Image 1 (cartoon, one colour):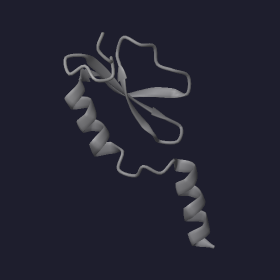
Image 2 (cartoon, one colour):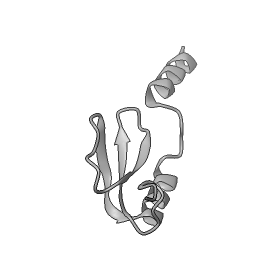
Image 3 (cartoon, one colour):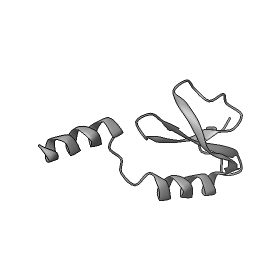
Amino acid sequence: MTNPFEDDNGEYLVLVNDEGQHSLWPSFIDVPAGWRIVKDKDNRAACLAYIDENWTDMRPLSLVRTMEGAAAS
């Protein structure tokens, strides 16, 4: 059995959580609590391209906000 997260022929979703973190997610697996779909079913390459284009800051949003607050002080 192949890893469902590494199937080049599979259909995927792109998920994001409240911290702005993105995840490639196999479309046949239920979306876990705390995550929402930001890109509907597509091929693996297209979903990875979406993540590359849209998740440019790997820091969690809570850390970004804390750092911005510290810089403003």
